[in-house]
Image 1 (cartoon, rainbow, N blue to C red):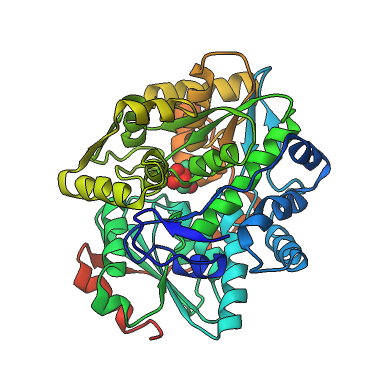
Image 2 (cartoon, helix red, strand yellow):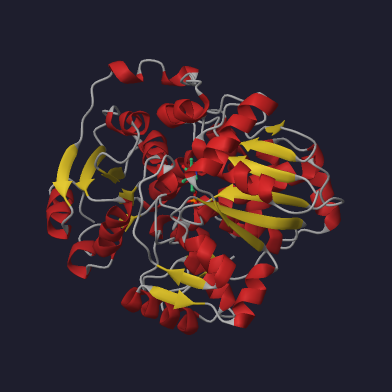
Length: 463
Ligand SMILES: *Cc1c(COP(=O)(O)O)cnc(C)c1O
């Protein structure tokens, strides 16, 4: 399998190189050259397999020989041994139509662990083989940072610089990052919002004088390997609910469009997904783009679902590439227009294409509170607010087929918001015991590219 940039002007890479590269050198994102196809029989055969075995089947065709099947199996076995549920991503039924897919059983109790636990091991394997060192620079609205740090802390050949918006991540999220004392982990609280952090990371990658000194890479969902590992649970859940004989819909709490893009990839690979419901909070750039063709940057509003408080969704570019007939030049021109004007409009044909897969819903604070209360009172479930956004959109969806809402975080990660809506304060997961007793370490820096570059430059290992 080979990988192309969505902007068509970066080298074509294999899986190992694409995993280590993160962003493409032309500013685009890497996508596979084609989608491996799974027949109905092959999908049906997944029903008997464990999570790890399912992951081996789904991911192997994307690796192009970067690992043997046995190497992949042992790597994934090690990655998912850190999860506290034997099913890794268990399904929970809420009522006749609705299920939750619990993606929060990893070390930092949010769905990002599902991909990052494996990626830490892939990095270690590939860097050892090449005798290289990597400087990981990431932006986080909370969950990516803690999951990346849990996956990469203490690993050799890697430094991690994680930017989070100062004061805009929950206490639990911040402490999960800042209490890790591994010498290769640097937390930076940026005086700005998440989009500022993401912009700084992009700017560092695009600054040749800086980027040429270090071997920079990313663990944001711009990294293809992350999305690949998220495709697995769409297959895993759908076959348990009757696929390929029965069509299943998924409702996905969406920020950067990574998780739901993995669902789109599963559909492209042959999984009979009925609808992909893209659920946003009031920061609704993706809902507007998919609903009305209007992808235009707004002002970020802080909400009780901080991991979705963004107004530029990096992975939307991967869909845009398909909407441009996989023409990198066309996609690059559209993105250049967006970067110039802060707006991009989908034409009628593109909107028709979007409508074959996606529905979109924007959920406000009142609808969220009602849904959290419904889940608690009617289904005996305390949900995290991100999951609540997904479930609100799922319950509003027309039709009567099964809908799986991705439960993207444990409610204990967002205790205040849950308590405000339901009156119930969720407990922390057992693994979080002691989090509030530990010492924290982080630096506060201004929203200024040269200040951040100077901080990284004196700490990172040069090429
Ligand atoms: C990251 C995150 C999301 C958004 O996922 P994207 O892939 O960025 O769309 C939703 N919920 C939680 C809890 C998250 O951590």
